[in-house]
Image 1 (cartoon, one colour):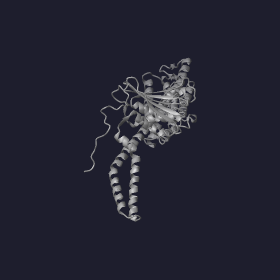
Image 2 (image 1 turned 30 degrees about the horizontal axis):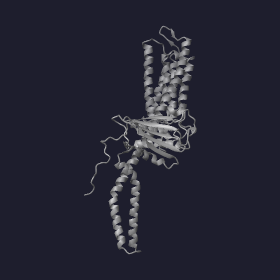
Image 3 (image 1 turned 180 degrees about the vertical axis):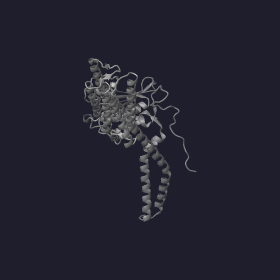
Image 4 (image 1 turned 90 degrees about the vertical axis):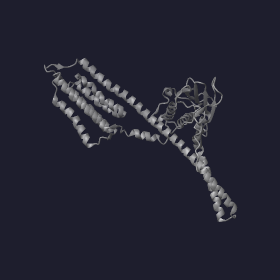
Amino acid sequence: MTDTTPSLFAAKQTGRRVRLRTLTVLRWAAVAGQIVAIAVSQRFFGLQIELGLCAVAIGASIIANVVFHFVYPENKRLNEYEATLMLSFDTVQLGFLLAVTGGLNNPFAMLIVAPVTVGAMALSLGATLVIGLAAVVPVTIMAWVYVPLVTAAGDVLALPVIFQLGHWAAIVIAIGFVGVYTRQVSAEIQSMAQGLLATQMALAREQKLTDLGGVVAAAAHELGTPLATIKLVSSEMIGELEEGTDLREDAELIRDQVDRCRDILRSMGRMGKDDLYLRQALLSAVIEEAAEPHRDRGKEIVIRSRPREAAPAQDLMVLRRPELIHALRNLIQNAVDFAATTVWVETSWNDRILSVRVIDDGTGYPPHLLGRIGDPFLRRGSRQGRDDRRPEYEGMGLGLFIAKTLLERTGAELSFVNGTTPYTGKSHPGEPLGAIVEVIWDRTRREGGIEASERTPALGENVHFGA
């Protein structure tokens, strides 16, 4: 994860998420709607509208679209500055068109919120504020300066002053509320999308390592016979050659290099053999494999099983899925990072559920984050959120998000609590009173889950090699 995380932020900071074609299509739709609204108002309702001023406003949008069509390719993606200018232009154009068609007396005045909504959904907070300001200023000006709507009989259509004031307040509040609400929802969606991308990268990396281990194990298995033959022949040559001759030294060198190749393949293929031949394993073995990389980090990891009532005493067989091992490894890593001395991994089960609890003796989860644990980028960009014990995640919550997402894909439910109430912020060395995460699977589910069925073969079909 350390290698892929910077690329996620680099992609986010480019800001090229809005296509020029999208904004031009929306602008053509707005132009068509404006023309239809003016034609209907004039023909069917007999309103006297300043067509010259309206043509100036609508013509500016048409000219802008035509220029963009011929100058830029359709697949061009706008950076944040360009998108802000385009949406600000659309906001000012709409404000001018509303000002020459009755101002706040125009029932379509609320549409000036639309560009702000688009900006809040796709751009940064600063760009959204600029577009919002470009909307508030014309709305405020048109409250005092506007071309009134006049009927064919010469009557002026105007709301009472108190209603105009209320209309202005409603538009300004809508700009602020819709902008903030849309931006919050969009930020959460983007954050979740980036977190899921990180999860997919982690799972793909784990799967590649698993596949690579299988390939190495197969290579070690296939090369075992020829290497053994070479060693046998070289040993026989050593016995027949005289001591101190060049040929004897060459034969000894061949034998030593064969031993070296055997040791390399054996060390590389240890994990691969497990993944190639053991498609399922004991739950305790899977927990041990997940905890193995963190046993030499100065914290004791205690693994214990506690079968519940009416449960068989023997350990359970589970599927050795890469996502399961990677997720449990993330949970154990998080516990080791913040533990004082010890981490406990407890497994328990009965006929209905299977539970895995990871407990540490650290300070526990901050209470204000308990309801948000499992969300990605909890403290995005805040230097205070970074922890020297976990520099690879910089306090963003990516590790727990990845673990939670991967485990939920296996049908698990996760809960995060503290071992002490109330929260003291102090560690409890040697006592399981720190952070607790419990993972529960429903054993009664027919589909999904991690438990191996009796029909799942532990070994694949034996294939005969050679003649």
